[in-house]
Length: 171
Image (tube, rainbow, N blue to C red; front, side, top):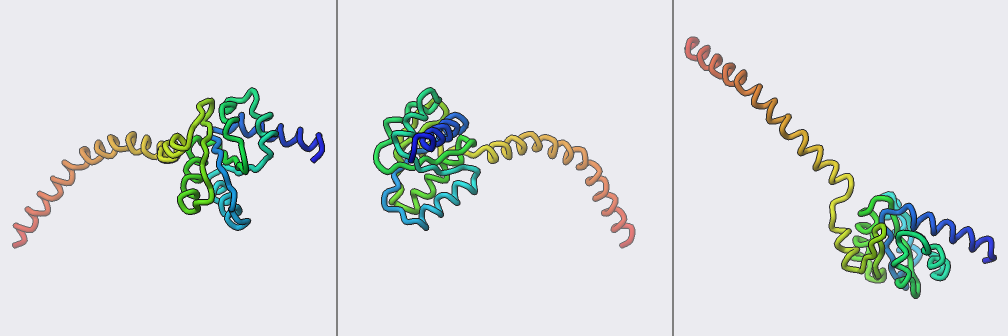
């Protein structure tokens, strides 16, 4: 890899560190090509990505970014998993690590907050952005549904009474 290629890699990594909501660092030693492909597919499915780069270049790219605190984790065969959604990458990495013991989570960063392995698991257990939006919408919609039910209830009661009276007269 010549100097120009290294500069391109450092620039790409810098963009990842600046724009990602979460970056997870893990050791991937022993993963087969098919397992790595599955790992990449899982992250892509949640809107994230996977990047394997030389640790020295990643440390250079980390300088001046919010994720600068994870530089100490970059030792050995490391892989970077990232996503704009602050929870998606952590969930995908945690789920893959449960299925495949060869992937060892070292830690990561959520914005400027460095995370250890337990921190990544805690982030993975949080609800995703879509789940939070769904719960907010449900909270907003619930009173409206109750109001519509309350307004419609007297009419339903009157209809039931009229039906009962009609049945009595018919009998």
